[in-house]
Every structure is written in structure tokens, then in C-alpha cells.
Length: 193
Image (cartoon, rainbow, N blue to C red; front, side, top):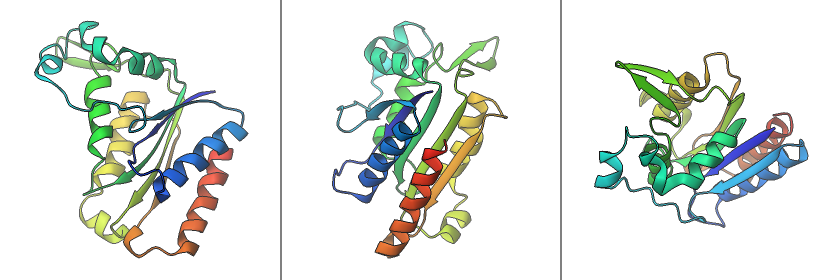
């Protein structure tokens, strides 16, 4: 299966990067063809310019500045996102990726005010998140990143599309043991993905 692996952590020595590397290795071990899209290393520009917004609904004009990212997304059969959660949201670079690449004509159509998905080629998806907050604090805040995955992404791919949600909460108080347990879980889940 062709898997688009999206990663968005700016520090190559971070636990987030270690999770990315482990996910990449585990998916390949499972026999998947992985397109490794490390947004920071690739220098992805997350800023939606005035021009980008003006042509947002004008396909294919809206893809000209992000064409290679659109092609990679359209070739994927599965998506895995490995990212930290900061302030109960995605890093700006990942949010910008969604804003600039997931546009009309690519991920959805809009006809007579009705949305329809163009992402039915995605057969499964997963996320590997790290939170500074505890699970309880994330729950109290409504856990927006989890809702984006379980609602918004699932709506794009289809309500029956298999989803994998893995999260290490309370990174502010983690230990080598909690990190290792989480890495073991990620490895097992990705090798079975």
C-alpha cells in the first residue's frame, strides 16, 4: 500500500522525530511503499497568501504553487501523521499544509453549496500524536486534534475507513519508561498497519 507519511516537528533530535523514524521503519517493514513527507525538512511554506485565498476554489489554479504535494496526496492509498500537539492544535506548518494542499478539486468538490469528498482513494489512516497536556486536560479542552482526526479526516475518507489514533499524553512529565512503552506500541501498530 502507498502510505503518505506526514511529519511536522522542527527538531531532528526530538522524541517526535524518533517517533517519525520508528513509524517510517515499521511501515516499510510491513511492506508498505512510504512517501516520507517531512514538512520542515522539505521547507514547506505554510502561509496562505492573498493569491492562494483568491484562487482557493479555482481548480486547478489553486494547486499551481503546491502541485507536487497535491500529486503525492492523490497517489496515496493511506495516510499516517506523526506530529506534536501544541496548544491543543497542530504545528502551523501542518495546519498550513491542510489549508494550502487540501483544496477544492483535490480533496473535495463544492457544487450548488454541497460538499462531496474526493478522498475515497484513502483506505486507512492513522496518527501518532504527542501532547504536553495530560489526557484529562486534553479531555477538558475538548481535544480538538483528536476530533479533527475522528471527525474531519474521517468525513473526507468515509465514515467506515479504518483509523488508528495513538497519543502519548503528558510529555511534560514523561519518563524514559513511558516513552519506550509508547514507542513499543507505535512499532507494533505500524507493523500491523
